[in-house]
Length: 135
Image 1 (cartoon, rainbow, N blue to C red):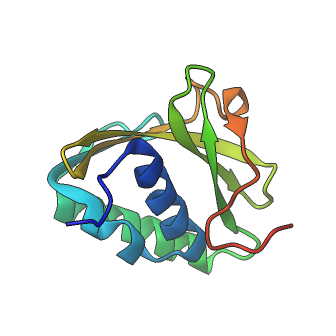
Image 2: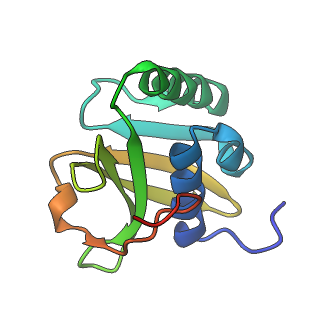
């Protein structure tokens, strides 16, 4: 268990740390056993902790091999004050997705990667990229 109760803000921070370092160790302990991962860019949801971790590990390995394909995960929020991660690829301003979370108890139960609705440009950006140096 975590020292602090898990909130959406902490889920967003863990996701951002994982992507900014390409290290799932920041995210893995927070995932529910029956976590669901959905993305507007894939047809089927990924269900279950082991399968979600395997899918994310594959994505991170792929990103790590591509020249100039750096990924940036920034803390943000939507106009509704919903905490989110704002994802960018290549540069910090090449926005690609907004990532939303549902937390149940002390675990992340759902991860939603949104590329269209809400659009990444709709997020309020903080300029905070956990575990990355400032510009």
